[in-house]
Length: 168
Image 1 (cartoon, rainbow, N blue to C red):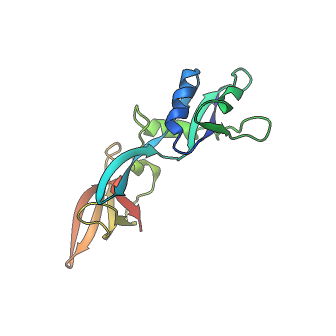
Image 2 (cartoon, rainbow, N blue to C red):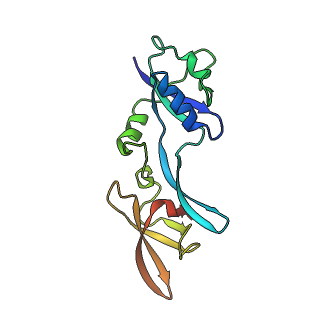
């Protein structure tokens, strides 16, 4: 019976490991999300793994040549108990797959990080550093959050992408 297993990769080696495992015929999933990155007075949005150094692969350990995974480029090894790989609890990866798009991109709003009334800090843009409150999490798939900011004694509502926010 095919189940999902966790592959531990080399640092920044998720894409390499994914490519090599897929070429060997393994069914793989690398969940990703957009993150804001600041460097040298420049802010940009990049696509990064949701779980750095981890990806998921599905196989039947009684049939598949799963030991070949440990020798693949970019892979450190499968998470195991010393003898057999440890399976991910049922339904977890299926829920992640259902919430992601074709490229495996997950909207951060689907992870339950933002809910009405939660305090958030703006990470980028003209209001960087300001603390506001989540007013609403907008439609699924849009990955946008409505936040309420108190500026000059007036509460102002604005929409922002979830990757530009962090919990305060």
